Structure formats: structure tokens, C-alpha cells
Image (cartoon, rainbow, N blue to C red):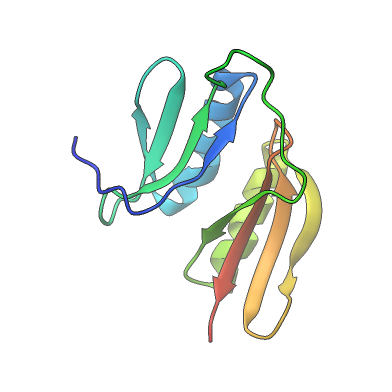
Length: 128
């Protein structure tokens, strides 16, 4: 399967199986395609153009994965309803709330969660 690599973010994990299960379920809401690159990294691709949406990886150096203070992965969605659905799905899968869906600055509508490894995610719609 060929991929178009426009941009991507990689989140570290200490439990690849649990992280894969979490993101398989969560990203199924946007029909993302799972692509297991190797035993250390898994990517999810856009069904529209096979560009990489997100990757998870066991750290290459063998040390514990940890979330960065101030680091966040944003996932752009097509509507406020999709933001609401992704947030609800993430919470149902065990994510920790860090900001319920709502209008933020100007045209930015977003919701915030921490995944199972403590990585911060925002699901957002920017309807300028």
C-alpha cells in the first residue's frame, strides 16, 4: 500500500496493543485505515488520500514513553458534530477529559482529552 506522507504526528506508547485498540476504535469514526508498519509502529491513514493521520510507536531507544508538557496532537474534523462524537468515543474508551467540546477562540470549536498513555489530543473544527 502506497502512502502519501504530507504530515503526521507520532505518539509514544508503553502498551502498543492497548494503544492500537484505543485508536482503532476512536479513528473508526473517521474511517481511518490501520497500517501496521512494523512491530514497533502503527499508522492510521486517511481513507480519502492515504495520507498519514497519526502514528503510535514504542520508543526506539527502549525507554519509557512519556507525554511532553505542552505537546498536543490536533485532529481536524469536518463538523462540530464530529468533534462531539470523537470526544464521546475517546471518553468511552478510557481517555481522560481535559475540556469538553465547545466554542473556543473565534471560529475554533474543540475538545481535549488525554489518551491511555497521557498523550494530549484535541479534536477540532475550524469553520472560518
